[in-house]
Image 1: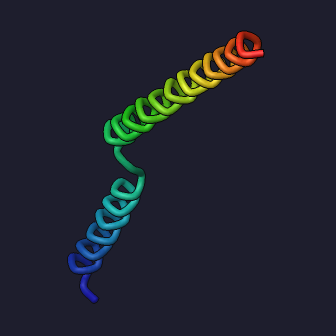
Image 2 (image 1 turned 135 degrees about the vertical axis):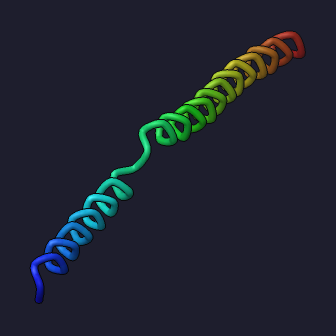
Length: 71
């Protein structure tokens, strides 16, 4: 092989390796956006669970009050 061809192939191999590693490293900006969406969903579910607990407590108090008033 001639020197120029060998140098070109080496440069090409290094470039491809660099691009592959860079491409596989992930995009921090898109990861932050996905994390943000996930956090918002989790926050909404947590709020719904809190409201569910409040409603269950209120229903139990109402049921006890009805039982005490009824007899």
